[in-house]
Amino acid sequence: MKTKYLATIAIMGLLTLGFSNSISASVTQNSSTFGSVLSQDIAQADLTRFPAYYTENGAALDGQDVVAYFTQSASVQGNSQYSYQWKGSTWLFSNTANRDLFAANPEKYAPQYGGYCAKAAAGGVLATTVPTAWNLRDGKLYLNYSADAQKEWKQDTANKIAKANANWPRILDNETLKQ
Image (cartoon, rainbow, N blue to C red; front, side):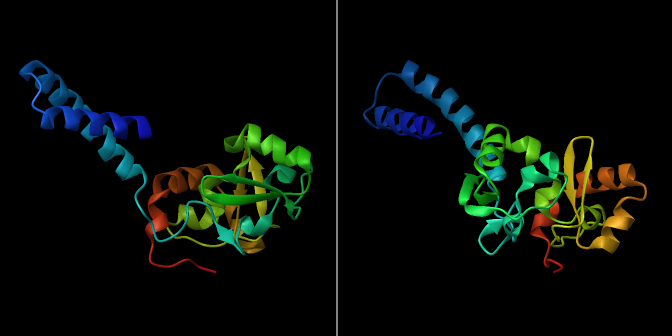
């Protein structure tokens, strides 16, 4: 992205110096394209009230090792010794192997709906999660607010996933986060 910004600055410098009309026409066309790209980048970086990944105590998902859900079928607390930075969050893992698996393919292991409660997301609200209320479905990790929320999530899950997908990530700008 820096290259685009530097190119724009250079082009604007050329315009200021009064180079030929043909360069000016080319610059105008490229600037228009650049403006469109910049607008898209700003829209994607839109600030929300809550982070894209549920973070507690300085770590994504309160430091749970998300890879362990897949490899050990268990919730396992991560260790800061095995941390990895991804998408603005610090992710903790219980060992080097899990950290490396995540680093190689974070989208595979990252929980759906940013690690916020999947059932709540289906209802259009945002809620924290507990590490023991989780579910793997079609190779994706879903977390829930509580064991009771997880029981409800498991009823008509396909419909709830469709609703949560429709609400995500818009709900990151909700007024409150149920804790």
